[in-house]
Image (tube, helix red, strand yellow):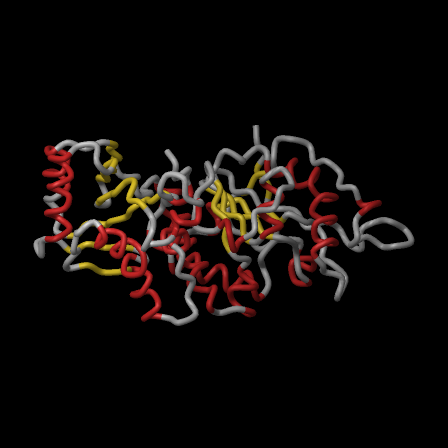
Length: 349
């Protein structure tokens, strides 16, 4: 049973983990005193509501956190609190932990020292984390993701936006708030997704049908807007890179989709279905949304005599919004939907 305790700066009943706290490996920690090999201050432990709904994991305490012996109570903590409140998330419903228990000496942060400190603090972190690890987790920063992922860092550049079991990775709030304001919007976007994780309202992945029938296309055609994508291959006996050249590649599959239904047709496998797909592509009755379609998909289709009309291109629309925005389908999916894009999966399947 968890024991109710009072902690500084809180008004709600809190609890401590049921497992005994394991000692960190201070002797090998880069943050420890180099002569005595002991911490420069008492490790800052997490806060544990009596009935938490999720976990926030940061990287390590700053000066105010050390002074008050609580995570995220300084300037970054205030910014984080404001973002939580704006998104109807309550701090006192969340376990809040750091991957590292001690504040690094000034100027001591490097990739190597952060990795070492995270590893040395890992026993202490796990003794606080393991009672709650089944809850939705928002790991804020690479070293936070390392702490919850068996010391295997997930870089935010490649990992944010996609849910791995119950883990969501985002930028550290200090970086988002004070060093790169462009990332503040992405941080808030991830908070909103975290809120959907907590409430069980994440978007559901669409139904996927391989080798669709005419009835499947009829269901699909009820929507007036369809996402479109093709997969190609090199002609037999030609080098693989020909499959990425829109003027030499062979069409292998074509997919159409809505938020609830997607169909993938193997080109040449069913002529009746194929004619209906061509009709949809060439009709003004539907808006067709491609990604990089003007530069790749549509030239491939044009070589087959298919003239796509009423088309849009998310890559170019994104470029119109910001010339510096990342334009990959993977990145756009991480922003606008809760599930990983098919390009993350094995395309060959």
